[in-house]
Figure 1: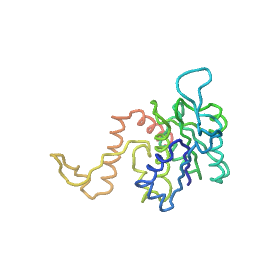
Figure 2: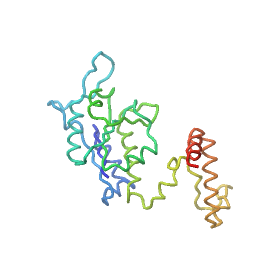
Figure 3: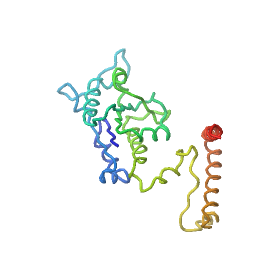
Figure 4: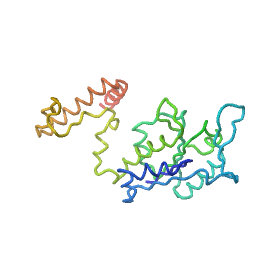
Length: 236
């Protein structure tokens, strides 16, 4: 899979994407990632990519033409039949694990980072296949959001993690929060690892983990549990 990020701060994105599991997967050729500077596609000598908003207001707005030229250059490099372009915006649809699963099945995606007071609406109308938001809050730019999406999608691609179970047991993948995890020592500050996890009985451990996942989800995210139970009822 290939993931491209269109940004005003490519160095910032490269720093994050070059570290840890994702960085290792890139170096090993398990996933392809590229960061592109939107300023390289400006049409003026000053390399400015923003201007004052029509109708007045605070701040500046990213211009449509540099965004368009950047996305089209990325599209030419991706060489896929239908590129999928995602704009990171506060008004986008809430990002979920399910959407990450779906995006991981595509050959290539482009993540476009907003900045300033937003982007010219015409760029979204012309280019965006969808808009994504991390949640009901605002951050300075779209880079952090794009990096989160890139990481979430990349780690589900073949060969990025050492085994598929690395993400299938995690929170949200099955619709539930993940069960509690423990490691050595067996007792820490008077708190002991549950006996069942030291029993070596695979079935009992599996049942315990499912029970804990259900209980934790019921306590912390009853909305998720409701969806999970409804989905399982439909499949019965």
